[in-house]
Image (cartoon, rainbow, N blue to C red; front, top):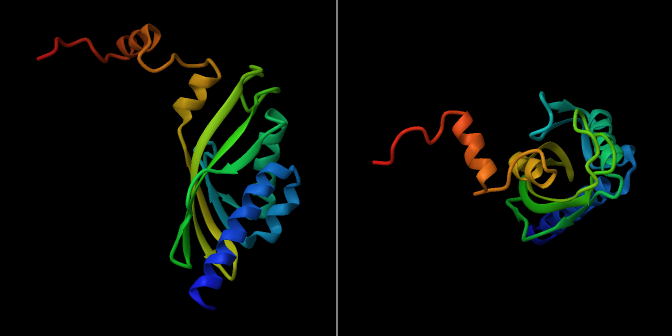
Amino acid sequence: MSEELERAAIEGLVDRWQSAWSGRVPDAFEDLCTPGVHYEDPLTPTPLEGAVELGRHARRLWDGVPDARVEKTGERLTDGRFVAAPMRLLGTHRAQLGPVPATGKFVVVNAVIYGEVQHERFLRVRTFFDLWSIATQLGMLPEEGSLGQRALFLLRGFGLRPAS
């Protein structure tokens, strides 16, 4: 396959990946991933194996953030086998998500996926995003630079030594 066709195929794959996360159809991942796809993100305590597990993970997001949508935020980088793609998830936290009760707050989660592609499907995907930012947006942690953040750091033992 030519480099241009390869890039177009990967662009299409990532577009469909974003649509699957926005589409609320757990089975959508089956067409995008190899049967034993390996998926990780900061909220998966262990890697997920297979499109069915990935679909269950996405369903938990949709249950907590029913209006969740994923958008492209920048240029995707690929060598034909690996792809790095910046994106963001937007939505309102309307129901319990894991141990976190509904906050009713709108969140914007900037993320990057790093994936390995095999036969125009994802073999492995790792999603990176900032949990502190999410917790701050949901009101679970104090905002950056606030008195609350300084107090939290003080309680954790940071900032007790005099500046040198």
